[in-house]
Image (tube, rainbow, N blue to C red; front, side, top):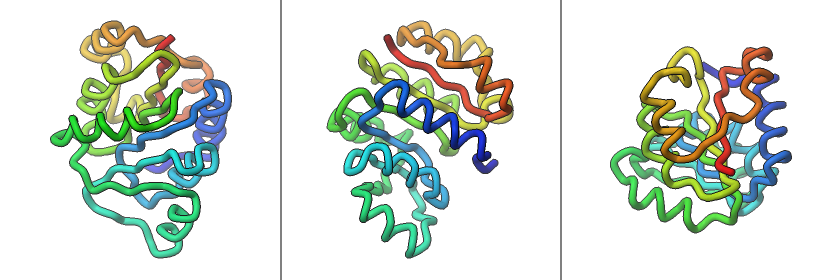
Length: 164
Protein backbone atom coordinates (compact mmCIF):
# COMPACT_ATOMS: atom_id res chain seq x y z
CA UNK A 1 0.00 0.00 0.00
CA UNK A 2 1.30 3.47 -0.86
CA UNK A 3 2.06 6.23 1.62
CA UNK A 4 -0.64 8.78 2.38
CA UNK A 5 -0.20 12.55 2.56
CA UNK A 6 -0.68 12.39 6.31
CA UNK A 7 2.06 9.77 6.46
CA UNK A 8 4.44 12.20 4.79
CA UNK A 9 3.59 14.78 7.43
CA UNK A 10 4.33 12.30 10.22
CA UNK A 11 7.61 11.10 8.68
CA UNK A 12 8.66 14.74 8.49
CA UNK A 13 7.69 15.20 12.15
CA UNK A 14 9.63 12.10 13.19
CA UNK A 15 12.77 13.20 11.34
CA UNK A 16 12.59 16.73 12.80
CA UNK A 17 11.55 15.89 16.35
CA UNK A 18 14.16 13.16 16.81
CA UNK A 19 16.87 15.05 14.92
CA UNK A 20 17.48 12.11 12.58
CA UNK A 21 20.75 12.52 10.65
CA UNK A 22 20.92 9.22 8.73
CA UNK A 23 18.37 6.81 7.22
CA UNK A 24 18.38 3.20 6.08
CA UNK A 25 15.27 2.49 4.03
CA UNK A 26 14.37 -1.19 3.55
CA UNK A 27 12.29 -1.26 0.38
CA UNK A 28 12.72 1.59 -2.08
CA UNK A 29 9.63 1.09 -4.21
CA UNK A 30 9.41 4.02 -6.63
CA UNK A 31 11.70 6.09 -4.40
CA UNK A 32 9.32 8.95 -3.66
CA UNK A 33 9.52 8.65 0.14
CA UNK A 34 13.28 8.30 -0.23
CA UNK A 35 13.32 11.88 -1.52
CA UNK A 36 11.83 13.12 1.77
CA UNK A 37 14.53 11.23 3.66
CA UNK A 38 17.20 12.67 1.37
CA UNK A 39 15.95 16.23 1.83
CA UNK A 40 16.30 15.84 5.61
CA UNK A 41 19.56 13.89 5.57
CA UNK A 42 21.46 14.78 2.37
CA UNK A 43 24.33 12.39 1.73
CA UNK A 44 23.26 10.12 4.63
CA UNK A 45 20.49 7.95 3.18
CA UNK A 46 20.84 4.39 1.92
CA UNK A 47 17.86 2.70 0.34
CA UNK A 48 17.96 -1.08 0.00
CA UNK A 49 15.95 -3.10 -2.50
CA UNK A 50 16.75 -6.18 -4.59
CA UNK A 51 14.97 -4.69 -7.61
CA UNK A 52 15.55 -1.06 -8.56
CA UNK A 53 12.10 0.22 -9.61
CA UNK A 54 13.05 3.89 -9.72
CA UNK A 55 12.58 5.75 -12.98
CA UNK A 56 15.44 7.76 -14.51
CA UNK A 57 14.29 11.11 -13.10
CA UNK A 58 14.01 9.68 -9.59
CA UNK A 59 17.47 8.07 -9.87
CA UNK A 60 18.86 11.44 -10.93
CA UNK A 61 17.20 13.25 -8.02
CA UNK A 62 18.47 10.60 -5.59
CA UNK A 63 21.98 11.13 -6.95
CA UNK A 64 21.68 14.90 -6.45
CA UNK A 65 20.60 14.30 -2.84
CA UNK A 66 23.49 11.91 -2.23
CA UNK A 67 21.20 8.92 -1.72
CA UNK A 68 22.88 5.55 -2.08
CA UNK A 69 20.95 2.62 -3.54
CA UNK A 70 21.94 -0.92 -2.56
CA UNK A 71 20.77 -4.20 -4.04
CA UNK A 72 21.45 -6.14 -0.83
CA UNK A 73 18.95 -8.68 0.38
CA UNK A 74 18.07 -6.86 3.59
CA UNK A 75 17.17 -10.10 5.35
CA UNK A 76 19.98 -12.37 4.14
CA UNK A 77 22.82 -9.85 4.04
CA UNK A 78 22.10 -8.64 7.56
CA UNK A 79 25.76 -8.17 8.53
CA UNK A 80 26.43 -5.99 5.48
CA UNK A 81 23.26 -4.02 6.11
CA UNK A 82 24.39 -3.57 9.71
CA UNK A 83 27.67 -2.13 8.42
CA UNK A 84 25.68 0.39 6.34
CA UNK A 85 23.71 1.42 9.42
CA UNK A 86 26.85 1.76 11.53
CA UNK A 87 28.40 4.07 8.92
CA UNK A 88 25.55 6.60 9.17
CA UNK A 89 25.61 9.64 11.45
CA UNK A 90 23.46 9.38 14.55
CA UNK A 91 20.67 9.50 15.42
CA UNK A 92 19.47 7.18 12.66
CA UNK A 93 16.16 5.90 11.35
CA UNK A 94 15.63 2.37 10.06
CA UNK A 95 12.52 2.37 7.89
CA UNK A 96 10.96 -1.06 7.23
CA UNK A 97 8.82 -1.24 4.10
CA UNK A 98 10.11 -4.29 2.26
CA UNK A 99 8.74 -7.79 1.86
CA UNK A 100 8.54 -9.13 5.43
CA UNK A 101 8.12 -6.29 7.88
CA UNK A 102 7.87 -8.38 11.08
CA UNK A 103 11.15 -10.09 10.21
CA UNK A 104 12.81 -6.79 9.28
CA UNK A 105 11.71 -5.27 12.58
CA UNK A 106 13.06 -8.26 14.50
CA UNK A 107 16.41 -8.17 12.65
CA UNK A 108 17.04 -4.43 12.74
CA UNK A 109 15.58 -3.27 16.07
CA UNK A 110 18.49 -4.78 18.05
CA UNK A 111 20.96 -2.74 15.94
CA UNK A 112 19.62 0.59 17.16
CA UNK A 113 21.70 2.82 19.38
CA UNK A 114 20.54 5.45 21.83
CA UNK A 115 18.45 8.10 20.05
CA UNK A 116 17.90 5.92 16.97
CA UNK A 117 14.41 5.13 15.68
CA UNK A 118 12.68 2.42 13.70
CA UNK A 119 9.45 2.86 11.76
CA UNK A 120 7.34 0.27 9.97
CA UNK A 121 4.87 0.98 7.20
CA UNK A 122 1.62 -0.96 6.76
CA UNK A 123 0.99 -1.23 10.48
CA UNK A 124 -2.32 -2.96 10.99
CA UNK A 125 -2.28 -4.66 7.57
CA UNK A 126 1.12 -6.38 7.14
CA UNK A 127 2.67 -5.62 10.53
CA UNK A 128 1.00 -5.75 13.93
CA UNK A 129 2.64 -3.89 16.80
CA UNK A 130 0.39 -5.54 19.37
CA UNK A 131 1.61 -9.06 18.54
CA UNK A 132 3.57 -10.78 21.27
CA UNK A 133 6.65 -11.29 19.06
CA UNK A 134 6.77 -7.60 18.15
CA UNK A 135 6.36 -6.52 21.76
CA UNK A 136 9.09 -8.93 22.85
CA UNK A 137 11.53 -7.56 20.23
CA UNK A 138 10.72 -3.96 21.19
CA UNK A 139 11.20 -4.67 24.89
CA UNK A 140 14.49 -6.51 24.32
CA UNK A 141 15.80 -3.57 22.26
CA UNK A 142 14.60 -1.07 24.90
CA UNK A 143 12.29 0.68 22.43
CA UNK A 144 9.54 3.17 23.29
CA UNK A 145 6.60 3.83 20.99
CA UNK A 146 6.67 7.23 19.29
CA UNK A 147 3.35 9.11 18.95
CA UNK A 148 1.32 5.91 18.60
CA UNK A 149 -2.09 7.46 19.25
CA UNK A 150 -1.59 10.33 16.80
CA UNK A 151 -0.29 8.01 14.08
CA UNK A 152 -3.27 5.71 14.59
CA UNK A 153 -5.78 8.58 14.75
CA UNK A 154 -4.52 9.88 11.38
CA UNK A 155 -4.68 6.35 9.88
CA UNK A 156 -1.09 6.59 8.71
CA UNK A 157 -0.34 2.83 8.83
CA UNK A 158 2.92 3.78 10.57
CA UNK A 159 4.27 2.25 13.75
CA UNK A 160 7.38 3.95 15.16
CA UNK A 161 9.70 3.44 18.12
CA UNK A 162 12.70 5.28 19.50
CA UNK A 163 15.48 3.94 21.67
CA UNK A 164 16.09 6.37 24.54
